[in-house]
Image 1 (tube, helix red, strand yellow):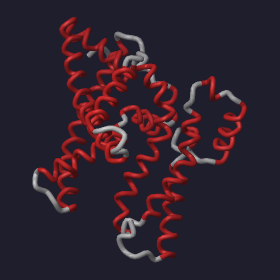
Image 2: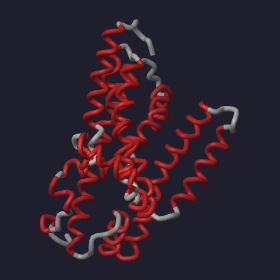
Image 3: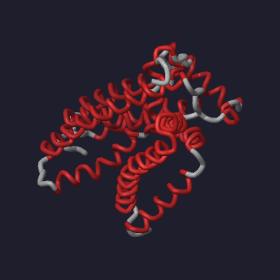
Amino acid sequence: PMGVAAEAPIQEAYTTAPFFKGFTEGYNTMDALASLAFAIIVIRTMKDLGLKEPKDIALGTVKAGIVVVVLMAVIYSCLAYIGASSIGKFELSANGGIALSQVAQYYFGTKGSILLAIIVTLACLKTAIGLITACAETFHGLFPNVMDYKKYVLAFATFACVVANIGLTQLIALSIPMLMFLYPLAIVLILVAFISPFFHDDRRIYFIPMVFTMFASVADALNAMPDVIKVHPAVQGILGIYQEYLPFFQIGMGWIVPAVLGLCVSMIAYFIAKPKQNVA
């Protein structure tokens, strides 16, 4: 090891609310957002393998998910340890990509850099293929008369190549406000999907919690904006209201209470209306 991980200096945000800081930092992986798009490919693959019933598809997805969760937990734990111990040799990096490059160079020299480039290329390529395919299929389904499937693929691939070249640090800085807005919505959508069958997939069970969550996620996005926008008096006034009245807003988790409240309201609306089964 390049150093003792336990001796690495702790950043201020991790001394007060380490779990929630790590939780919101996880937004940068975009895994939850990607899962919504990948679901299309996974379900189609399950069907191609002969699984037709929704229960069988769900069970197959859970089995695959368990394997992925275990392997990813091992990989990320190892990366976290390597990153923490690397502080013994290197200063804190602007992003994880720089840190990983430094570690590879330290242990394996030029060969390590080449090996890392190959690993990252393969790892990102499979993600890029999945996302471009899923997005192209989604947009072709929504707007079939605009372009055909292949043109959607070309458009998304070209756009991704252009944006990727602004650099990882800049890309993260630009994407954080959007992630702070979208991620709570994605998390709530995924969680609500688990309980929706108990309410006959009524649309209110989805719609109302999403609206309540959006109320908080908009403020989270404003709070993550660059200083040139954040210091505007109007923005400061809005953020001041949220900071005073919305629990957990300071740690980026202000959406939790509105989401729970919205879910409760949707359940009340469901039982009052007494909808028929399969309304959605």
